[in-house]
Length: 313
Image 1 (cartoon, rainbow, N blue to C red):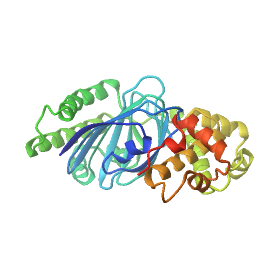
Image 2: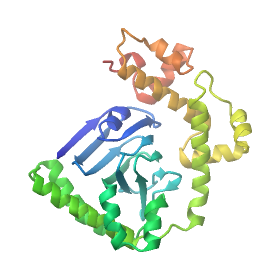
Image 3: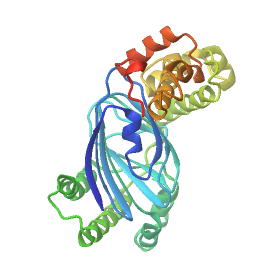
Image 4: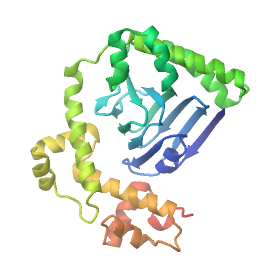
Protein backbone atom coordinates (compact mmCIF):
# COMPACT_ATOMS: atom_id res chain seq x y z
CA UNK A 1 0.00 0.00 0.00
CA UNK A 2 1.26 3.48 -0.95
CA UNK A 3 0.53 6.66 1.00
CA UNK A 4 1.94 10.03 -0.04
CA UNK A 5 1.48 13.80 -0.16
CA UNK A 6 2.88 15.73 -3.13
CA UNK A 7 2.81 19.32 -4.38
CA UNK A 8 2.96 20.50 -8.00
CA UNK A 9 3.30 23.62 -10.12
CA UNK A 10 2.16 21.92 -13.35
CA UNK A 11 -1.35 20.56 -13.92
CA UNK A 12 -0.26 17.62 -16.08
CA UNK A 13 2.41 16.49 -13.62
CA UNK A 14 -0.34 16.48 -11.00
CA UNK A 15 -2.66 14.47 -13.27
CA UNK A 16 0.02 11.91 -14.12
CA UNK A 17 0.78 11.30 -10.45
CA UNK A 18 -2.69 9.95 -9.62
CA UNK A 19 -2.08 6.23 -9.92
CA UNK A 20 -4.16 4.25 -12.41
CA UNK A 21 -5.79 7.23 -14.12
CA UNK A 22 -5.19 7.92 -17.82
CA UNK A 23 -6.01 11.61 -17.94
CA UNK A 24 -5.10 15.13 -19.01
CA UNK A 25 -5.46 18.27 -16.89
CA UNK A 26 -5.61 21.52 -18.88
CA UNK A 27 -5.01 24.70 -16.88
CA UNK A 28 -7.57 27.41 -17.66
CA UNK A 29 -6.89 29.91 -14.86
CA UNK A 30 -4.05 32.37 -15.39
CA UNK A 31 -0.79 32.42 -13.45
CA UNK A 32 1.53 29.98 -11.70
CA UNK A 33 -0.42 26.91 -10.64
CA UNK A 34 -0.08 25.43 -7.16
CA UNK A 35 -1.68 22.09 -6.29
CA UNK A 36 -1.53 19.33 -3.71
CA UNK A 37 -2.26 15.63 -4.05
CA UNK A 38 -2.76 13.26 -1.12
CA UNK A 39 -3.31 9.64 -2.06
CA UNK A 40 -3.50 6.15 -0.62
CA UNK A 41 -3.36 3.34 -3.17
CA UNK A 42 -3.67 -0.41 -2.59
CA UNK A 43 -4.28 -3.49 -4.70
CA UNK A 44 -8.08 -3.16 -4.70
CA UNK A 45 -8.82 0.43 -3.71
CA UNK A 46 -7.60 4.01 -3.92
CA UNK A 47 -8.38 7.20 -2.00
CA UNK A 48 -7.12 10.61 -3.01
CA UNK A 49 -7.75 14.25 -2.28
CA UNK A 50 -6.64 16.93 -4.70
CA UNK A 51 -6.63 20.69 -4.37
CA UNK A 52 -5.83 23.05 -7.26
CA UNK A 53 -5.71 26.82 -6.99
CA UNK A 54 -6.50 27.43 -10.69
CA UNK A 55 -9.48 26.56 -12.84
CA UNK A 56 -8.73 23.28 -14.64
CA UNK A 57 -10.54 21.01 -17.12
CA UNK A 58 -9.85 17.30 -16.59
CA UNK A 59 -10.52 14.60 -19.17
CA UNK A 60 -9.52 10.99 -19.63
CA UNK A 61 -10.53 7.51 -18.48
CA UNK A 62 -11.20 6.09 -15.02
CA UNK A 63 -9.25 2.99 -13.91
CA UNK A 64 -10.33 -0.35 -15.36
CA UNK A 65 -12.18 -2.70 -13.02
CA UNK A 66 -13.00 0.05 -10.51
CA UNK A 67 -16.13 1.81 -9.31
CA UNK A 68 -15.30 5.43 -8.52
CA UNK A 69 -17.06 8.11 -6.48
CA UNK A 70 -16.09 11.67 -5.62
CA UNK A 71 -17.18 14.46 -3.29
CA UNK A 72 -16.57 18.18 -3.53
CA UNK A 73 -15.10 19.60 -0.32
CA UNK A 74 -15.03 23.28 -1.25
CA UNK A 75 -17.56 26.08 -1.01
CA UNK A 76 -18.65 28.47 -3.74
CA UNK A 77 -18.76 27.15 -7.29
CA UNK A 78 -18.82 23.39 -7.73
CA UNK A 79 -17.23 21.15 -10.37
CA UNK A 80 -19.22 20.02 -13.41
CA UNK A 81 -18.71 16.28 -13.92
CA UNK A 82 -20.12 14.45 -16.96
CA UNK A 83 -22.42 17.40 -17.56
CA UNK A 84 -23.82 17.57 -14.02
CA UNK A 85 -22.92 19.97 -11.25
CA UNK A 86 -21.33 18.10 -8.33
CA UNK A 87 -22.93 20.13 -5.55
CA UNK A 88 -22.78 19.63 -1.77
CA UNK A 89 -25.25 16.71 -1.91
CA UNK A 90 -24.04 15.11 -5.15
CA UNK A 91 -21.73 12.12 -5.62
CA UNK A 92 -20.47 11.63 -9.20
CA UNK A 93 -19.91 8.04 -10.39
CA UNK A 94 -17.45 6.55 -12.88
CA UNK A 95 -17.30 2.88 -13.85
CA UNK A 96 -14.68 0.51 -15.28
CA UNK A 97 -12.55 2.65 -17.59
CA UNK A 98 -15.36 5.12 -18.36
CA UNK A 99 -14.39 8.31 -20.19
CA UNK A 100 -14.96 11.50 -18.21
CA UNK A 101 -14.88 15.27 -18.52
CA UNK A 102 -14.66 17.44 -15.40
CA UNK A 103 -14.63 21.23 -15.21
CA UNK A 104 -13.01 22.21 -11.90
CA UNK A 105 -13.42 25.78 -10.59
CA UNK A 106 -10.59 27.75 -9.05
CA UNK A 107 -9.66 26.47 -5.60
CA UNK A 108 -11.39 23.11 -6.06
CA UNK A 109 -10.84 20.46 -3.41
CA UNK A 110 -12.05 16.99 -4.42
CA UNK A 111 -12.14 13.79 -2.37
CA UNK A 112 -12.31 10.60 -4.45
CA UNK A 113 -12.49 6.87 -3.72
CA UNK A 114 -12.47 3.86 -6.00
CA UNK A 115 -12.90 0.18 -5.16
CA UNK A 116 -12.84 -3.19 -6.91
CA UNK A 117 -16.02 -3.17 -9.02
CA UNK A 118 -16.40 -6.95 -9.22
CA UNK A 119 -16.27 -7.51 -5.47
CA UNK A 120 -18.65 -4.64 -4.82
CA UNK A 121 -21.11 -5.96 -7.42
CA UNK A 122 -21.31 -9.29 -5.57
CA UNK A 123 -22.10 -7.51 -2.31
CA UNK A 124 -24.56 -5.13 -3.96
CA UNK A 125 -26.59 -8.00 -5.43
CA UNK A 126 -27.70 -9.06 -1.95
CA UNK A 127 -27.75 -5.63 -0.27
CA UNK A 128 -29.46 -3.32 -2.78
CA UNK A 129 -32.94 -3.21 -4.27
CA UNK A 130 -33.61 -3.54 -8.00
CA UNK A 131 -33.94 0.25 -8.30
CA UNK A 132 -30.71 0.82 -6.40
CA UNK A 133 -28.88 -1.71 -8.60
CA UNK A 134 -30.19 0.13 -11.65
CA UNK A 135 -28.78 3.40 -10.34
CA UNK A 136 -25.46 1.70 -9.62
CA UNK A 137 -25.19 0.58 -13.25
CA UNK A 138 -26.50 3.64 -15.08
CA UNK A 139 -26.64 6.90 -13.12
CA UNK A 140 -23.89 9.51 -13.65
CA UNK A 141 -24.29 10.71 -10.07
CA UNK A 142 -26.17 10.11 -6.84
CA UNK A 143 -28.00 12.64 -4.72
CA UNK A 144 -27.30 12.03 -1.04
CA UNK A 145 -28.25 14.02 2.05
CA UNK A 146 -25.68 16.15 3.84
CA UNK A 147 -25.99 13.93 6.90
CA UNK A 148 -25.06 10.81 4.92
CA UNK A 149 -22.12 12.53 3.23
CA UNK A 150 -20.88 13.86 6.55
CA UNK A 151 -21.06 10.34 7.97
CA UNK A 152 -19.00 9.06 5.03
CA UNK A 153 -16.35 11.73 5.50
CA UNK A 154 -16.14 11.23 9.26
CA UNK A 155 -15.67 7.50 8.68
CA UNK A 156 -12.99 7.67 5.97
CA UNK A 157 -11.11 10.98 6.20
CA UNK A 158 -9.52 10.50 9.66
CA UNK A 159 -8.02 7.15 8.61
CA UNK A 160 -6.95 8.61 5.26
CA UNK A 161 -5.26 11.59 6.94
CA UNK A 162 -3.45 9.36 9.43
CA UNK A 163 -2.14 7.16 6.59
CA UNK A 164 -0.76 10.01 4.48
CA UNK A 165 0.85 11.54 7.59
CA UNK A 166 2.51 8.23 8.43
CA UNK A 167 0.68 7.81 11.74
CA UNK A 168 -0.61 4.33 10.80
CA UNK A 169 1.51 1.42 9.61
CA UNK A 170 1.02 0.47 5.96
CA UNK A 171 0.57 -3.25 6.49
CA UNK A 172 -1.72 -5.95 5.09
CA UNK A 173 -4.01 -5.90 8.12
CA UNK A 174 -4.58 -2.16 7.78
CA UNK A 175 -5.21 -2.54 4.05
CA UNK A 176 -7.82 -5.28 4.61
CA UNK A 177 -9.64 -3.27 7.30
CA UNK A 178 -9.74 -0.16 5.16
CA UNK A 179 -11.05 -2.06 2.14
CA UNK A 180 -13.91 -3.47 4.23
CA UNK A 181 -14.68 0.01 5.52
CA UNK A 182 -14.79 1.41 1.98
CA UNK A 183 -17.08 -1.37 0.73
CA UNK A 184 -19.49 -0.71 3.60
CA UNK A 185 -19.36 3.01 2.85
CA UNK A 186 -20.25 2.47 -0.81
CA UNK A 187 -23.17 0.23 0.16
CA UNK A 188 -24.49 2.86 2.58
CA UNK A 189 -24.26 5.55 -0.09
CA UNK A 190 -26.31 3.56 -2.60
CA UNK A 191 -28.85 2.51 0.03
CA UNK A 192 -29.49 6.15 0.98
CA UNK A 193 -29.17 7.65 -2.52
CA UNK A 194 -32.02 9.28 -4.40
CA UNK A 195 -32.25 10.35 -8.03
CA UNK A 196 -31.32 13.91 -8.96
CA UNK A 197 -34.36 15.89 -10.16
CA UNK A 198 -34.07 16.45 -13.90
CA UNK A 199 -35.05 20.10 -13.77
CA UNK A 200 -31.97 20.82 -11.63
CA UNK A 201 -29.53 19.26 -14.06
CA UNK A 202 -30.92 19.88 -17.55
CA UNK A 203 -29.40 23.28 -18.35
CA UNK A 204 -25.91 22.40 -17.13
CA UNK A 205 -26.01 19.07 -18.98
CA UNK A 206 -26.88 20.72 -22.32
CA UNK A 207 -24.21 23.39 -21.83
CA UNK A 208 -21.58 20.83 -20.87
CA UNK A 209 -22.47 18.78 -23.96
CA UNK A 210 -21.94 21.80 -26.23
CA UNK A 211 -18.60 22.60 -24.59
CA UNK A 212 -17.47 18.99 -25.00
CA UNK A 213 -18.47 18.87 -28.68
CA UNK A 214 -16.65 22.15 -29.38
CA UNK A 215 -13.58 20.77 -27.64
CA UNK A 216 -13.68 17.63 -29.79
CA UNK A 217 -14.03 19.68 -32.99
CA UNK A 218 -11.18 22.01 -32.04
CA UNK A 219 -8.79 19.22 -31.04
CA UNK A 220 -9.47 17.47 -34.35
CA UNK A 221 -8.51 20.65 -36.26
CA UNK A 222 -5.32 21.94 -34.66
CA UNK A 223 -4.11 23.69 -37.81
CA UNK A 224 -6.81 26.34 -37.55
CA UNK A 225 -9.04 27.26 -34.62
CA UNK A 226 -12.70 26.97 -35.73
CA UNK A 227 -14.61 30.25 -35.76
CA UNK A 228 -17.63 30.79 -33.55
CA UNK A 229 -19.90 30.83 -36.59
CA UNK A 230 -18.42 27.55 -37.85
CA UNK A 231 -19.02 25.92 -34.47
CA UNK A 232 -22.58 27.26 -34.30
CA UNK A 233 -23.28 26.03 -37.82
CA UNK A 234 -21.93 22.55 -37.11
CA UNK A 235 -23.75 22.21 -33.78
CA UNK A 236 -26.92 24.01 -34.97
CA UNK A 237 -27.05 26.45 -32.06
CA UNK A 238 -27.08 30.23 -31.79
CA UNK A 239 -24.04 32.32 -30.86
CA UNK A 240 -25.82 33.39 -27.69
CA UNK A 241 -26.43 29.77 -26.66
CA UNK A 242 -22.82 28.84 -27.31
CA UNK A 243 -21.44 31.84 -25.43
CA UNK A 244 -23.69 31.30 -22.41
CA UNK A 245 -22.85 27.58 -22.35
CA UNK A 246 -19.12 28.27 -22.14
CA UNK A 247 -19.62 30.92 -19.47
CA UNK A 248 -21.75 28.55 -17.38
CA UNK A 249 -19.43 25.54 -17.62
CA UNK A 250 -15.94 26.96 -18.21
CA UNK A 251 -16.21 30.57 -17.05
CA UNK A 252 -14.78 32.00 -20.29
CA UNK A 253 -15.57 32.72 -23.93
CA UNK A 254 -15.41 29.83 -26.46
CA UNK A 255 -12.43 31.17 -28.43
CA UNK A 256 -10.45 31.80 -25.24
CA UNK A 257 -11.27 28.33 -23.91
CA UNK A 258 -10.25 26.49 -27.09
CA UNK A 259 -7.06 28.53 -27.42
CA UNK A 260 -6.20 27.71 -23.81
CA UNK A 261 -6.54 23.98 -24.49
CA UNK A 262 -4.03 24.31 -27.34
CA UNK A 263 -1.62 26.26 -25.12
CA UNK A 264 -1.79 23.39 -22.62
CA UNK A 265 -1.05 20.92 -25.42
CA UNK A 266 2.09 22.88 -26.27
CA UNK A 267 3.15 22.87 -22.62
CA UNK A 268 2.74 19.09 -22.41
CA UNK A 269 4.95 18.71 -25.47
CA UNK A 270 7.61 20.97 -23.99
CA UNK A 271 7.64 19.23 -20.61
CA UNK A 272 7.86 15.77 -22.21
CA UNK A 273 10.34 16.42 -25.06
CA UNK A 274 14.01 17.51 -24.84
CA UNK A 275 14.86 20.89 -26.37
CA UNK A 276 17.39 19.13 -28.59
CA UNK A 277 14.53 17.22 -30.23
CA UNK A 278 11.82 19.91 -30.38
CA UNK A 279 12.20 23.67 -30.06
CA UNK A 280 9.52 26.06 -28.83
CA UNK A 281 8.55 27.27 -32.29
CA UNK A 282 8.03 23.73 -33.55
CA UNK A 283 5.91 22.78 -30.54
CA UNK A 284 3.80 25.92 -31.00
CA UNK A 285 3.32 25.28 -34.72
CA UNK A 286 2.00 21.78 -34.01
CA UNK A 287 -1.00 23.44 -32.35
CA UNK A 288 -1.50 26.14 -34.95
CA UNK A 289 0.48 28.96 -33.27
CA UNK A 290 2.59 30.39 -36.09
CA UNK A 291 3.33 33.88 -34.70
CA UNK A 292 5.90 33.13 -32.02
CA UNK A 293 5.73 36.50 -30.26
CA UNK A 294 1.93 36.34 -29.94
CA UNK A 295 2.15 32.74 -28.78
CA UNK A 296 4.81 33.54 -26.16
CA UNK A 297 2.74 36.40 -24.76
CA UNK A 298 -0.36 34.23 -24.42
CA UNK A 299 1.67 31.37 -22.93
CA UNK A 300 3.20 33.65 -20.31
CA UNK A 301 -0.19 35.17 -19.49
CA UNK A 302 -1.65 31.71 -18.85
CA UNK A 303 1.20 29.89 -17.10
CA UNK A 304 3.09 32.77 -15.50
CA UNK A 305 6.32 31.97 -17.35
CA UNK A 306 7.76 32.21 -20.86
CA UNK A 307 7.83 28.97 -22.89
CA UNK A 308 11.63 29.14 -22.83
CA UNK A 309 11.48 29.00 -19.00
CA UNK A 310 9.37 25.82 -18.88
CA UNK A 311 11.29 22.84 -17.50
CA UNK A 312 12.35 20.40 -20.22
CA UNK A 313 13.52 16.78 -19.76
